[in-house]
Image 1 (cartoon, helix red, strand yellow):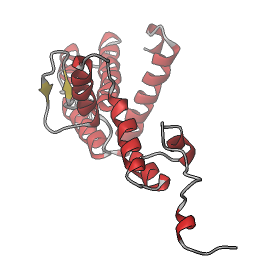
Image 2 (cartoon, helix red, strand yellow):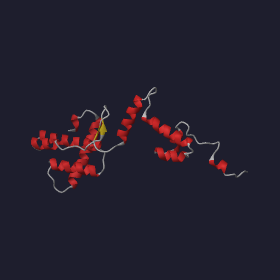
Image 3 (cartoon, helix red, strand yellow):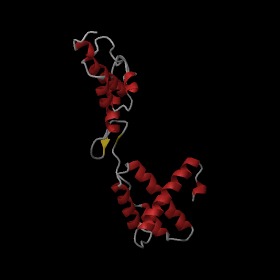
Image 4 (cartoon, one colour):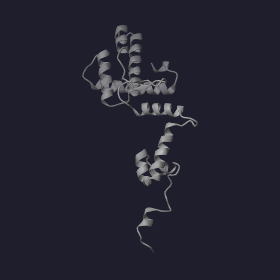
Length: 183
């Protein structure tokens, strides 16, 4: 099955997906390979809180395994067709026209909505990351400590936060200059 894939990365991904499915399949009580089992596997992946895209990639590999098994005569073509009809995980998303599908809101949806609004902004074309920079700059101007801004933006290192414009540590007017202790 893997030999029919051109890309080495695709082969690696499919191999990982199939190995994971077989490990799960062998850990369950004696199950026959059918649509119900593949649906249970999808539920198992969802319970692990994997991203819908990851779940769907893994299911594609299992569907391909079913077709290869049908081509080899190991399972019936009807059984492979049934496995093919197992629904994937529902994705949340947004289309180019700005229509949101799915339930709930994800970071990606917010990113695309903001990007669409920024693209329409005149005269300068803005990007969603400009909002992070503006937030950092405004917080810093309002007296926020660099460590607080780092936490707000989710940066691991304070040096990353310091790269934002106007977010350098203040050496003049530092907080310790106001405590009134003179040498």
